[in-house]
Length: 175
Image (tube, rainbow, N blue to C red; front, side):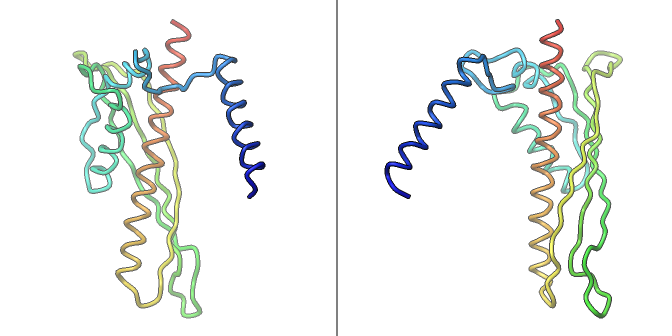
């Protein structure tokens, strides 16, 4: 690319960012220096333990996203359960599968830490991904499955946190 074209793209990007700043655009749950009501609410969510290895990874990913501004005293508990559907997609001539698709369904519920706990909001997020099963390469298939789990963890955690941020945004706008 020529330098002139790169300069033009840079100026267009800068102009676009300035235009968004003028319209009142704000990141929904960003970490500005002073914090926001939404980031404070998100930081007050403790994530309940989730069984299995996938659950451990998902809990860590949720904590990293929710506590990005630091954890305050928890007022809420987020309970998450992910189930999987597995189906073969491609087949060789001898009938063995060559590709596996995982359908992950994440059911979550946010409750208060009051006694008794009071439900606040809940939802269901669906994520799907697939990986190939190479011939005679067990470890490659195992590594592909682990990478698939990592992608599913990231996507489902991001979906849950986005839904929670949208919920708190609606609450702040209404209240």
